[in-house]
Each structure stands twice: as C-alpha cells, then as structure tokens.
Length: 360
Ligand SMILES: Nc1ncnc2c1ncn2[C@@H]1O[C@H](COP(=O)(O)OP(=O)(O)OP(=O)(O)O)[C@@H](O)[C@H]1O
Image (cartoon, rainbow, N blue to C red; front, side):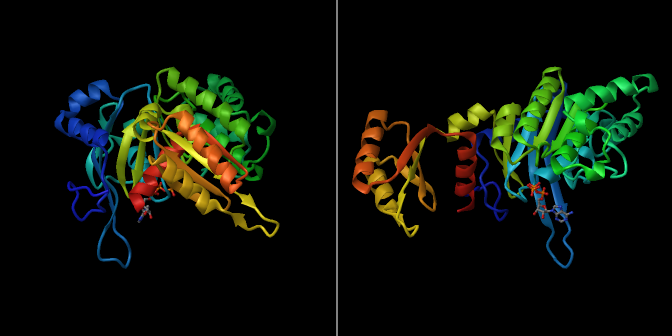
C-alpha cells in the first residue's frame, strides 16, 4: 500500500477513515475537541535515538484521533507496531517528541501529574512487590491513591472479588502464577475508581474463565462512564470490550473504527477452510489441486493462508451460497479432502488480511 502523503516514511497507507479523522482533529481547535472528547491525540509522534545508529527511529508517526468519554479504544497491531509507545506517551512514561495528547483537556506534555491522578494504569510488566501478599499490595496502592483509611477495607475487598483473587489474597505475589499477577495488576488499576483506565495487554496469560470475568468487570466500569484504552493481541478481547479499534503497523494507525465497522469494511464475504486428507506417512494429499479448483470455479476468491493440511480461502459475498456449496461439494468428491467449513469473516481474519496486505 503506497501512501503519497508520507514519502520515504515506510510507505504505509492509512485508510480513508483514518485520514478523515486526522484532518478533522488537526483542523479543529483543541479546546473544541476537548469539550466533546475524553482523550485527543494530535499529531502525536515519538522518536527514539538509537545507540550506535546515526538515524533516529520513529516509533509513532503523527497519530491523530479523538475519543469521546465512555468509550474503550483498543490499540491492535503486531509486535513492535507502536502500541505501547503510544500508550506510554499517554501515561507519562515516555516523553512526547512532537505533537501532543490531551486527557480531559489537559496536555500530557505539561499537565501529566494532574492526568496521572485521574488515571488507573495496568502496565505490560506487572509492577508487584513479591514479598507482599495480594491483599497487602492492594492496601499499599489504595493508600498511595489516597483512599481514606475508613474505606480501605471495603475498597480492597471489592477489588479482590472483582478480579476473582479471593483464593489467593493472602499468598505472596512472588508465588502468584502469571495470570494471577495480571489480575492483581488490573485490580490495582481500578483502585479509587479513576476516570481513565489504561490497560496494556490486561488479560495476557489469564485462563478463559478469568478473562471473561474480567471483561464483564471492565464492561461494567466503562458503562459507568469511564474511558478505557487498552492494547491487546486478542481480537476476541477487542470485540468484547472495545467501542473503537485502531490497527497499527510500523508506528502508524492504518485503520480506525468500531469492530463492526471494520468487519463490514474489510471483512466482506466468507472464509472457507479446507482440510485435506493425509496418507499413512503424513503426506498431505491434493491440497493444491483442491484449492486451485475452488478458486478457478468461484472466480471471486483467493487463497489467504495455507498451513500443513489446511487452506484458508477468502470468498466474496457476491458468490451465491448455492454455488459456493456446490463447488465445495464437487471439489470434495474430486480431491477427496476430509472436510470444509464456511464462516463469516471474523475480526481476527480482518486483522490478518490487513497485516498481510500491509507487509507484502
Ligand atoms: N526505549 C526505546 N528505545 C528505542 N526503541 C524503542 C524503545 N521502546 C520501543 N522501541 C521501539 O519502538 C517500536 C515500537 O515498540 P512498542 O513497544 O511500542 O511496540 P508494541 O506495538 O507495543 O509491541 P508489542 O506488541 O511487542 O508490545 C519497536 O520497534 C521498538 O523496538
């Protein structure tokens, strides 16, 4: 994807929605943007000076967006896309190189202390003291947050239940599993009922039950008028929690919108998965022939990924389902593959397609 607006700068193209949002944010005075939005990024840029390298490294290129209160923004992208760097400029962990970001109308460059007082933060690496128990940790952070002594017990008890740490509250955090450490870190971030909650990969390493419980908690928190920003590698998590998703690559926001909008825009059609047969020596049989037959017969389809005995095809929704199924049945008879599945494109597939297109 070539972007004429950024010559020599990675040549990645932002989609129309991102360009429109950037134009709107950059042309509107900050005071007006901040009246209607909880968080505003205005040409936010981060450059790192790299040791032993003459050229500085641009980790985040001029990001601009405005997020209304009571929304949850998900930053998605491959490793090194610039999610954490963007995030850390909002929390004050990284200095901004140029541009600015505003939280409730306050600049992260000049008013970060006031912003931090309104913000809960779950960093990517758990910042826990391993010789304190979970309960002691919550007491410590609640005191630091300024929770009155008389409320300490109730506040910490509620959080222990919220993040399902009751069976582990009196164990030393140094003995916690990775998932329980994440639960405690998320618990710390919601102490004091902050207006803004920043979560860097909040559910990494959690089991599926704990994850879903936490999604419910975060959903409730957002419904009560809080604004959330999270980074995640889980599309399922973004679909469950985020009202807006920004997909990043090489320091740029490439597309922006609600999960449904992104699916409608990029995920039109069906994903077909074919599982080929395998002989007694583990050799995959006639997978190439089978998908070539299907792609040729359907025309509006393409191979999206192959993996051992599986091939994933993207099929346009202009192909009638009757034709799609009869073609797949014919191919199944002809090439004797084990089975096939047809499903509507998910957000995960949108993301993978986007990344594939971006990095070819
Ligand atoms: N302190 C630093 N000095 C130099 N380069 C850095 C620094 N921190 C991050 N980077 C670089 O900036 C780029 C973006 O990193 P960042 O941590 O924001 O990515 P990410 O999208 O959060 O990735 P991940 O999903 O792996 O956490 C990477 O290429 C990284 O190597």
